[in-house]
Image (cartoon, rainbow, N blue to C red; front, side, top):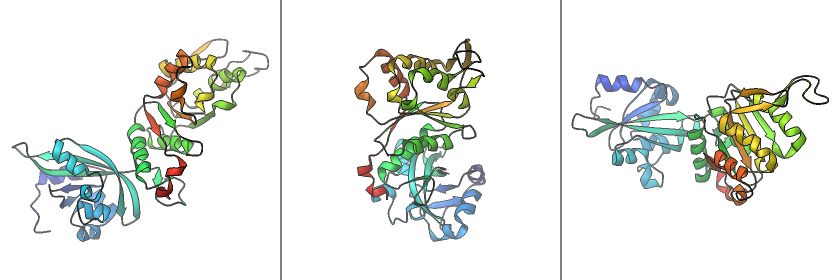
Length: 312
């Protein structure tokens, strides 16, 4: 490592300040230094065997962009801006999906002299088929995983679109696990199984004496998901006359239990799934259009089963 430039104490302190594995790179992808988290995770011998980031991460002999991968370092050098991309990395523990963040470091002449590469591991994926997490390695899978990682920390509602059997509930659970609400409950709701008569009571709950047979107060599924994630399965099957109630929930976070009137608020993240292409149904009614607009603030398309051979 003596051929490499001497790193200042300030840069070393900056590098050590990251709790995640991080490395300092030269403009030509040389690994100049690594923080303690990186050395603990990958091992010091791993660094001695690999002098370039593309060697360590992908076992390539050329930079990522020359091997068909998106290269965040190159993008940072071209734009001068931080970049983020999801890659499948080789590690001493096997292959793993990693969110890569690159940050430029400038000198006094506003020239990029170093780059920081910070590695954020994902909690919800694996390349091994025996894993209980999402399993895959194809480009389509990685694009979906990148979207999950991007939206999970936010408060944005998510619409999952895909064929039956593409694992929409697993994706919803992955969003929940990767979110700041992971300690809360994940509540799946089969909207197709809720009749019009039961919809309000099941979703929003009811007070004692609200109707015949309501002998006790009942907590609704929305309230049960408070502080967690509410997964609305088959949202396209909700009767149109009940969609206005769902729209109020999505717009304001406010719902009402079945009489006597009690107003409550929620702050749960809502994830929805649709097996039909709901975009074709937007013309049905104004409420449906508004709901879809709320659902589609962020949507994740799931690859069809016929395109998953490369994920095996």
